[in-house]
Amino acid sequence: MQPSLRAARVATYVYFVLCGTLMGAWVVHIPAAEERVGVSHATLGGLLVLLGLGAFAGMQVAGPLADRLGARVVVPVSGVLCGAALILPGLAQTPWTLAGALLAFGFCNGCLDVSMNAHAVHVEKAYGRPVMSGFHATFSVGGVIAALVAAGAASAGLNPVPSMAALGAVGIVIALASARALLPIAPAPVAADSHSHSDSDAHSDSGSVEAAQTSPAGSPRGSNGRVWLLAVLALMVMLCEGAANDWSALHLKDVLGAPAGTAAFAYGTFAAAMTIGRLLADRLVARFGSMAILRHGAAMAAVGITLVALGPWLWAAFAGWALFGLGLSGTVPQLFSAAGHADPAAAGANVSRVAGLGYVGMLAGPAVIGWLTHLVALNHAFVLLTLLCVTTAAAAGILRTGSDSTPRNDLAPVGQ
Image 1 (cartoon, one colour):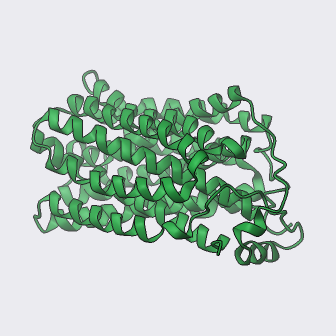
Image 2: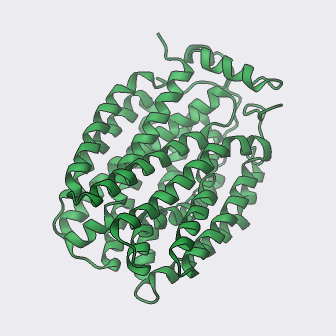
Image 3: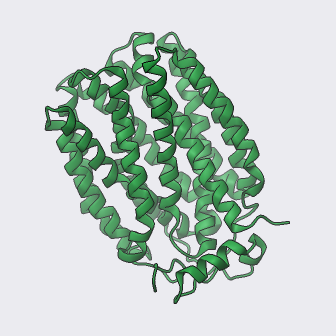
């Protein structure tokens, strides 16, 4: 029996939470890893590039495989590998072993990330309305979970290794248990009810994948050039997100002198704001279009990171990280969704291009910030992120060139 669309959607949520938790478990332990290995900010930034390179390689492998073999195979295998690899950075004692651990963990995380996003595109297509931001919201939930676990472990004086090992083991179990609910192949879109959002939702949730596949696809093939332009925007946006992931805790600890337990909540604040924004973004996209979300979100993020860079107070830092997360929250899902819908038959490959270049930015960002600390203070290096956010806001018009700037017929807005 084919899985229902509701079950497939719930399973997709689970994998996004899993991916966010596993990545967050590493992110919140970066200060401890830096101290244990004995490297500077600049050297740590260089090592973090390897995580991005590993993720990029994993995405290029997993994207086409997801198109060929189906998400039901690629997503759970990637989840198991990612859970197993989480312990490696926690065990590293030298820069060389940390480099190898980050490369391996990055590869596994990249496989999980792009395959679950490709599956999310197919679920969104079958639902006939925007749901991508909701999936990304649950990724941020995973970051909050990891921050809470890390803060509790740090306050109790526990070594990071046990908590990372436990989260990895739980992740393996969850990855295997959720596999059967995934869609076996890419479904064709279900025509959305243009008069009743609730009727459309009920039809989608009660229908099977087999029923969804009876509708014609009708999706145009997007140009490779536009997909690569989306990838460049993803690089800039995710560079900003990567900087928050890897430097937010260190910013509070080193610049503002916050204790380790408090510093861990800098990333938690950012991730919580990302979650709230992504929970709201699907409805906002349906009402205003994805171009508006990208433009105004990037502008808000620019304000937030500028407050972080220039504010000398702890409350200003938390407020800035919150605004930064809220602004960035809806940007990445719109870029991924636009790439996936450009050609549903090649959703995995197109998402792998956008996500791959984006995640190079996510991990190159921390490295760039690390290198900039040779010239300026850590908080002043964040001004680069302000410039990238402003550039993204100015370039948001690229979504106007396709069907992404306004609600589409196959992604009907709420209330119409």
